[in-house]
Image (cartoon, rainbow, N blue to C red; front, side, top):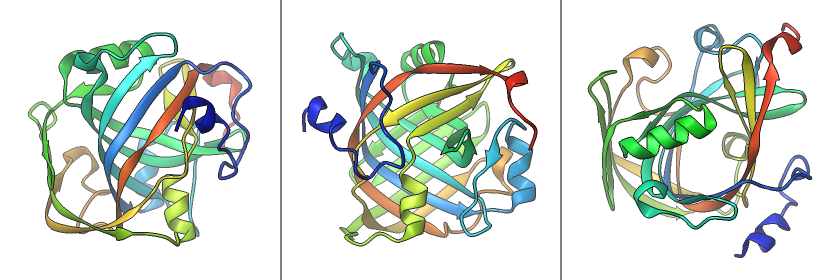
Length: 246
């Protein structure tokens, strides 16, 4: 699929793609999604007051998404594999603001130190380096500073042809929200609807001490995806004083 075809594939989106020129291209490939239903009182501790926690049938969710970032580049420049390709893990929850629902990152790890520094410097997203190794059926990460560990051994199952409303709610998000000291940054994105497969876990060790009241026991739901091509627009900063209180 060309970028033009991607930008013209929009029927699945909840709102139109931005009118502004896009800024970045990237691919999120071979993704593992692990989802937990969590308590509202616990997730509130991690979300800035300017953002409203999004709920599915009255409950918030947290997801661990482990994938491989590839070919990330600015619009008019080629990808540089030493920086553009790296494994990534994000721990995310779901929020809404200004009538748009999207993703808020509790944590983002990258498997290349230089890639993390470049990505954090350009986006202000909370990238940090972790030792990550992946093979065809295993994804392993270790962060000594935060004592975070992830070890997923899995097998990919059959394609999911009829998604539930929850599966769509957890995966089809087209804006990212992140806070800094003075502002809430938003990033509009676009991709085709995630192709999803069933996944079975042969082993799962997930230990994020900061989130041990959110991520625990077996996930309530999990998926695998071969990935999507992604278009991203520039960062939009909104001063925190501009937000209403919820």
